[in-house]
Length: 336
Ligand code: NAP
Image: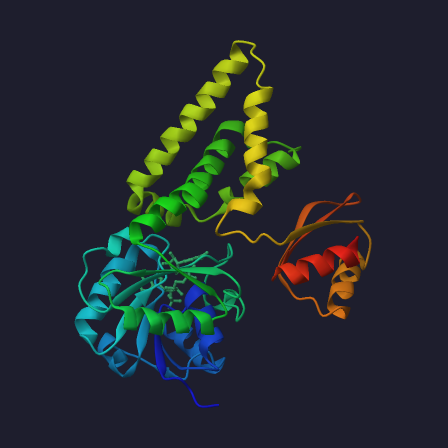
C-alpha cells in the first residue's frame, strides 16, 4: 500500500510507541528517543522505519508528534518548532493543553483519552487508541493543519474531537483531575496501611490512586486554577453532606439527587457512548467467552469491554459498549 507520507514521533514510550504501531501501515514513521536501547527496540520491532538524531531531521515529515513526559512537552514543542520552522506541523499528546497557548507557528494540540498504568515502549499496544476520544486544539487557526492531524488520529483508530484549550482543561479538571485528587485523599484519609479487609466501594473509588504521583503532580501544577475550582466545589459538597449527617438530618434526598444524575450519565455525556449493556456472568470457566461468542456469531462488534465487581466465587458483570444503536438493540435481544 502506498504510504500517506512520513510522521515523526518524539518519545517512544507507552503513547508514542502505541501511535507508532497504529500508524506504521499508513505512514512511514520516523522516531526519536533519548535512550539508544529504546530506539533499537523500536527499529527491531518494526515500530519505526527511520531515526531522527536532531529535531531538524523531522523537516521531511508531514507532522511530528511530541510524546515526551508531560513536564517536558512545552519545552520540547518550542524547541521542535524552532528547528522545523513552517515545514512540519507540530502536535503533542500532553494531558493538559493550556500550557501551549500563545506559542506561534504550525501547532495543533492533541490529547488521546486512552492509556494504562504501565509506561515505556514495551507497554505500547497497536490498538491502545482504538475508539478512544482524541481531543484536538487548533491554537493558531490553521484549518488545513487541523485536517492533517485529524486524519492521523483517524488512522490511529481514535475519534477526533475539536475544542479550545480552555474547554479541554476545564473538562478534564472536572472528569479526571478532581477524581484523581479525591482518590489519593480518600486513601490517605481512610487507610492506616495495615488493612486486611477492604470493601468493593473502597477498591472501586480508589483504583486510580495507584497512578504515577509525579505525573499527577505535573497535572496539578499545569491545570492548577481549574483543579482548585473543582476541588473547592467538591469540598463544599462534602462539607454540606457532613453537616447534614452530623445534625441527624435525612440525607436521602441529597443522595437520591446524586444517584439520579449518575444513572442518567450515559444519556447525557458527550464522551460516553449511549449503547451500553450490563450482563451478569457467573464465576466459571468460559462464561465471558460464551457471551462474546454469541455476539461474534451474530456479527456484532463491541467497542469496549469491562469486567466489573469481579469477586472470586461470586461472579460479576460485563459492561459492553456497542458501536451503534443497531448493534445495541441486536445484542440486547440476543443476550436477553
Ligand atoms: P512513557 O511511557 O513514560 O513515555 C515517555 C517517553 O519519553 C519514554 O519512553 C522516554 O523515552 C521519554 N523520556 C522520558 N524522560 C525523558 C526526558 N527527560 N527527556 C526526553 N525523553 C524522555 O509516558 P507516556 O505515558 O507515553 O506519556 C507520554 C505523554 O503522553 C505525556 O505527555 C502524557 O501527558 C501523555 N498521555 C499519557 C497518557 C497515559 O495514560 N499514559 C494518556 C494520554 C496522554 P526513553 O525510553 O528513550 O527514555
